Image (cartoon, rainbow, N blue to C red):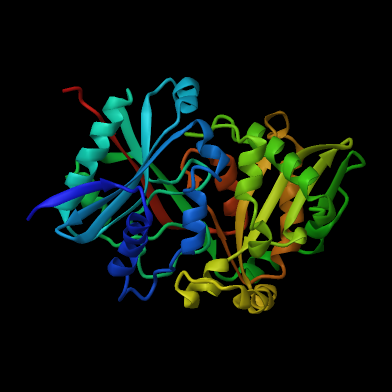
Amino acid sequence: MSYIVREISGETGWKDFLSIPYEIYRDDLYWVAPQTSEVRRVLNKEKNPYFRDVVLKVFVCYSGDKPVCRSIMVINRRHWLKWNKKSAFFGYFESLNDISAARYLFKQIETECRASGAEFLEGPFNPNHYSELGILTDNYNSSPVFFETYNPPYYPGLLAGAGFSESSVFHTRINTNIQATLSKYGTAAESDIYGRDFRFRKFCIWRMKRDLEIMRGINNDAFENNLFFLPLKKEEYRFSARFMFFVTKPELILFAEYKGQPVGVLQCVIDFNRLIKPLKGKMMIWNIPGLFMQRNRTKDLIIYTVGIKKEFQHTRVAAAMIKSAVKILRKYSTVTTTWISNENKSVIHISDLFEMKPYKHFAIYSKHLQSY
């Protein structure tokens, strides 16, 4: 069987790139189709500020005339400077169960990487370190929640067959009866008495730019040493937050202030995937009022991020944020987390306090690019 890999340069290529998942998951009851317009927006080099000084190439592998495999390639030299490692990244990887196609696709990507000076190829990142990441490696019998990847069980085998190996493993956690857990906390956990120096406030939608900038500053400081992390620029953060209030509400975002200075942020989101799954990737403007009504009724919550500035990570701020989280969680029945590193003992400890059990595991894959 013959294969050819093409770099996307026109509308026909984009149609093929976007069509591959629909072929793979057409009989899959658990898949949640991504919004095709959002995929195009994120991968638009002219609109997405992340790509202003970053190389992005988009590839589709064909068997004859049929698109069977796809991926993007990203080279960010800021990452090289911070981490002292010349890694290129792949993402939005989707493939039919065809190991030859996957090998052919990555052979082309690896050639492009070497030509740019990269020494490693890692991923998937969709399309970067603060987006969806990883290959699902277990628990394929449930739909992904918001910000969670999903793939068939054969994907790890495809990547292994293309020469990749696992380099990092993350997991999510879940509590399907959070009310039973919270009943053990009693009223003391709801107290607003954190000390005179502490104050908690919700996100102010009328001062959205200000609060987004505060969130960016806290998270850039809090996650500075996390694997793959790069500080987000103001334009990048605003671009990624454009549709934030489709999936969250001001009362689900809490800032911790110490002596008037913001030192932490707790951000929760609704499991919006549950709401958009029936739309099959084609959300129209007339769907929006109904989605907002459903959003306000849903009882499925995700703890999206808990960021505390490094200076305050081993102080009363963490305990105070846990108490504030309790007040939010009392309104929901099922709570999950986004991905957690196995080395992040503080977050794992907080998850244990809320009796959140390990749920799904996700792997980042890496390949050393040998010189020819």
